[in-house]
Picture 1: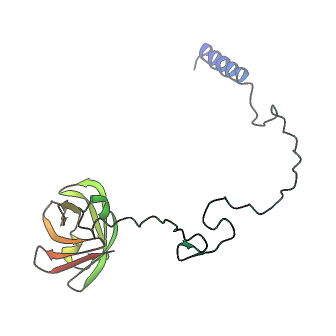
Picture 2: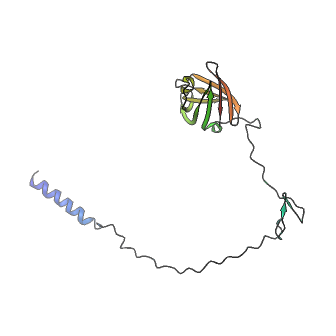
Picture 3: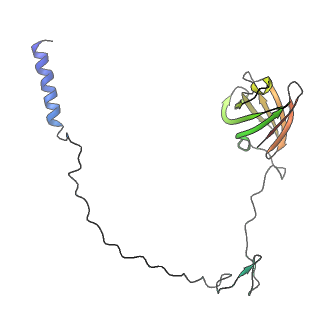
Length: 178
């Protein structure tokens, strides 16, 4: 390296070091806040809301106010779309399932990652060659189609909720359940 290049390099490093005045990482520029005194917290019983069932110390029995004979309203449970004949959605199938076919029991996992023939699926612990081929799934109406890596049909299932049953492509019964 020639002398002028060395002088230029040392000058740049020196200027960079001078320009960077903060060479330490202490927070000495900020002074800590003084501690604030804390008064003790007092506890007391809250009074009931007037006009509400049970507000005057009344006991609610079987959803009714014992003294005023008024009913307490409760929200109905969320309907199960599969039990009520509603359509089956792709998100209803996501996650892990137990698969049984021909004496083999293993796990099936379904995601919404696009894959040949539908969406990505995989199995774990399957000794049956047919179940080990499952690489994808698709929803066709209320039928679940399990497919291999090339998009070929491995099994077709129907059902609702947490239990589906059907046949593999070679005719063996298959059951998929949560």
